[in-house]
Length: 157
Image 1 (cartoon, rainbow, N blue to C red):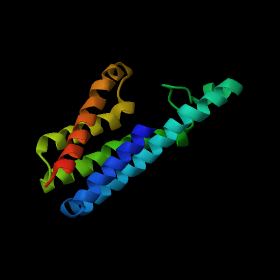
Image 2: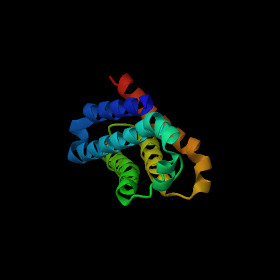
Image 3: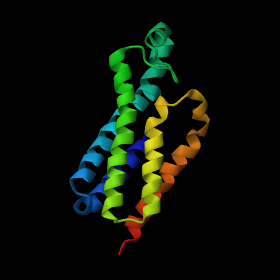
Image 4: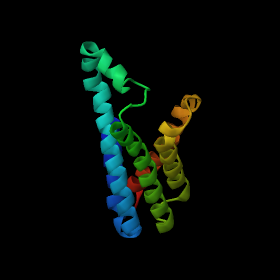
C-alpha cells in the first residue's frame, strides 16, 4: 500500500511539474491514473486487512463470491470494478505517457519504459495465468521508467 501511495505522489509530482507542457491530455491521463490507483488501493486494503478476518469467520462467503487471492469475483459489479481498476491504470498511463512524449519534456527512453511498463501492468488481469511468471519483469520496466523520470525531475536545472 505504501508503494501505491508513493506511486500516486510520484505521478502527481510528474504531472504538476510538467502540467503546462502536457496540457489537457496530461491532466486527463493523470486523473485516470489517480482513479485507478485509488481502486487498486481499495483492493489491496481488502486483501491485507479485511480478507484475513472474513476468511477466518466466513470462508464460505469468500468461496461463493470468488474473493480469494488469485480468483475472479463472481458478482458482475465487483468484477467490473476489479477490471476497471486495471484498465484505467493502463489507459491513464497511456494517455499521460503519450502527452509526455509529445511534449518532449523528458528523454524518450524513460517515458517509453514508464508507458510500456504501466500499460502491461494494467493489462495483467486480462492475460492468461501462465504469463503471471513474468510479473516481476513487467513491474521492473515500470519501476525503472518512473524512477528515471523522477531522477530527471530532481536533476533538472
